[in-house]
Length: 240
Ligand SMILES: Nc1ncnc2c1ncn2[C@@H]1O[C@H](COP(=O)(O)OP(=O)(O)O)[C@@H](O)[C@H]1O
Ligand SMILES: [Mg+2]
Image (cartoon, rainbow, N blue to C red; front, side, top):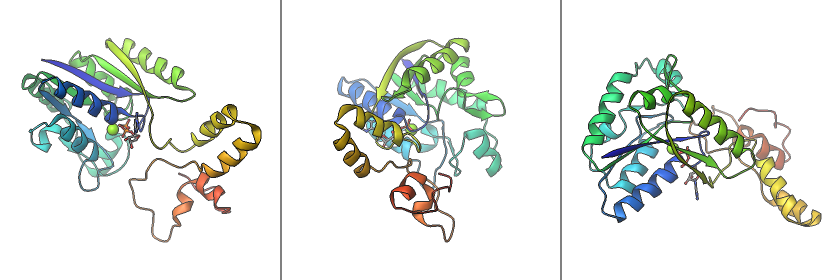
């Protein structure tokens, strides 16, 4: 049995996608795969990541073992838990990871966000992984800035005494808000000036999918300045 902790340079970079791809590939080789998303935030109803992982791995374990903490607010676990009055028990999480690893050939554990995301107080995912000596896979987004983000994450992993097994650059569907400009820049580098102008008008950058419903009365476009600008709205200063 072996365990791999899948972390990322950020949220929305492709951790779940890569973990699911790994689970599929391992399953295809006849490996028994277990999965965990120890803490999932932004959960309204079902925990999406945990369900995707479970389906990819065909893991028969109860959802409570795969994803013991599901929190509503789309925030770092420590913050979301505090808002909901939940005390995340790090000892319990560590125990569950050990238990689940013993029941499969490979256990894939997906973190939330990156290594320094707080779980409880000052305890981060880096500490949880280090406590169990879990080797890590770092997922980054294949875009400008990723070398720096990957190197920063690798340094944090090394400082925590973690072994980095590798890096995967994924192609996340929606860039986080603000990354759209970089995409447009890539288009303009790759094309003639005239075509890039047309392209950048067509390619409206967007925010990562909102997990929280907009406040009553808010216009949907006001959630994303990029879209608001594209629509010619003057409300483009609203926060994403
Ligand atoms: N290599 C890829 N090819 C296609 N879609 C991808 C790829 N990597 C990520 N995505 C998509 O990008 C979005 C964010 O990826 P996800 O795995 O949920 O990120 P994270 O788990 O890091 O928050 C999802 O819609 C996912 O399906
Ligand atoms: Mg995920």
